[in-house]
Structure formats: C-alpha cells, structure tokens
Length: 371
Image (cartoon, rainbow, N blue to C red; front, side):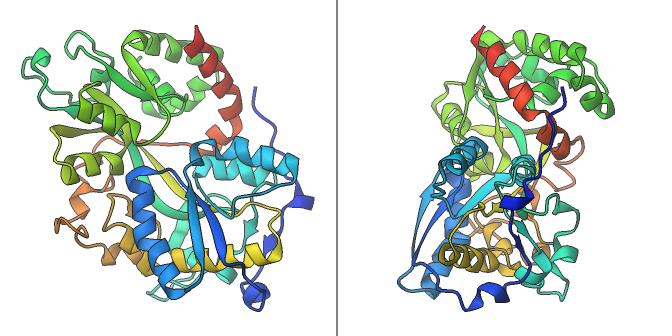
C-alpha cells in the first residue's frame, strides 16, 4: 500500500535568506553525517579541510550513519534531542525527511552562492533539486565490480547485469546491499520485465513476488552489505567475486588500490546525493550549518570533490572544472558514470516512487532475508 505523505508544516522552517543568519552567533563545532570510506574522504578533502582552514577555532566530527539517517532522525525528533548538524542523504531519503518535517526547507536561490558562470542555484542544479529540503552534491551510480582473476569462470567475464544471477557460468559468492532498492529492480529486469515497466510491476504483489523469486535463486551465494566500503573490501579479500556498491568506491579499489577488479557498468542505477539540515537546531548551530553548506556547495568545491572520487558534481557550472585525480594524475572524466562509454544501458532510479514505498518494501525485504 502506498505510504501517505505527511508534511509537518509546524516543525519545518523555511530558510528564506542567508542574511537572516549573517549576524547570528555561530557555534564552534559541528557534527557532519556521511557514509564513511572513499566518499567521506572526498568530502573531507574538498569541503571540510578548506572550510576549517578558513575558520580557525572551528572543529567538526564525522558520524558515518547516513544509511540510518531516516530512522535516527525520527528517533532524535521524538526525543527532542537533535545531535546532528548537517546530514548527507540520498534523494529518496531527503524526500521522506522533508515530507515528515524532519528536514528544513531551503530557498536555494536566497541561501546558496550563484554558479561561477553567473547561473542561479536553481538553474545550476536544475532537475537535481528533487526536494525543497535537499541540496545536491553529486550524481553517482550503484554498479558491480568483479574479480578479473577467477579461474572457475574459464576466461569468461560478466558483461551484463543478468550475469549476476548466472551461477552456472559465474559461480561464487556475490555481495548485494541489505535493502530492496536496486536489488528489486535488477531482479525484475532479469526476470524479463521491460525497463519502462519495472516500477509499475513493483507496485503489485505479483511483481514483488517475481523479484523475490529471482533473488532467491542466488540468495545462498550472497553476502549482504550495509556500508559502502563492504563490497570493495570483500572483493579485495577474495571473499566475493562480484558485488554491488557505489561506483566511486570501485574506482578507489581499482585505480587507487590497484586491485584485480573491473567494472560492470550494465544497468548501473543512477542516483543523487546531497545535504539536508535537520529541523529543530538552535539558532547558533543552524547558522554554522548554513555557513558550512554555503561554502561546501559552491562551484569550485563540487568540482574539487571530483578530484578524489569518480562522482559527477551536481552543479552544471562545476563540470568544466573537473580535471585530474588529486594524486594519481589520471583524467577523471572516463571514470564518471555519465561517461558515454559507461552509460550505454543505464537504469534511472525513481526517487519519488521509493520515497512512497520504501518503508513497506523494507519490511518485506527484511522478512524475506530472515526466512
């Protein structure tokens, strides 16, 4: 059943202008929430380090709980104790948090900096502004990496998404994320459902049963992961031979760590990631959070992040500034999920659909895992 969206207007504050906080006292510490691993490292290098250098005396700590952001912010809100200041979430979670009044609405054209090309933030971020509470940072994809030294595969290598479900040609352990998102879509695609029909089918009991049945064919060969760093480590250790994770994590494994791993881009699932600010922050913490976000989402900072990880910057004005990797000296453009060679068969993630159905399918998925 479709979840009912509730907008708690009384607890959602709209930020209608940075000037409202310009004179506010700002605290000297922040708690930033992200995903850990290579992605968080890229944020630390591109955003946080230069921000702290410009603001002596300010400190910040990272909390690696973004995969639990919705549940934890719900609990914090109920307890009346918001301990996070700025939270990195995927788009669908931002929509849920905004609908529930747990994330603040932000007028980006009043609060954020214009693009270096003179564009307004609304023009610069364009269609990636999927929620009034969401400030996009990067476009990324969930894709598969596979070991290139598997003798049991007899010289074969995976070339399409359905090879993940082919235990005969590609025996061995896989890794998949411990959530329905992406797994259900891939399972339906490999059950013969057309790409354009996946979400219509997934709304039905028949479609959900079909997806679970397909996943059941490999269930005994799957290691289920929760953190983005899990699959790269499992692949590096040889504990799995093929596994899903974020394309930037696989870039790090392949290019920075020089592991015998290659990318399987087929049916990569596009998504976007960005910041939200929790509702209920006192004025001094809110002022600091806004000051950081304004800095961290300008044209140059988003371009700088692409020097550390293979994610596309969310601002259009940042794209021309993307160059080489910060330490390897290799061009980053060919490693982006948006590169034409990598984007021949993409699957576009439906943010709003998952915002509506996530809680229901999460419960069903966890129940299925336990059986």
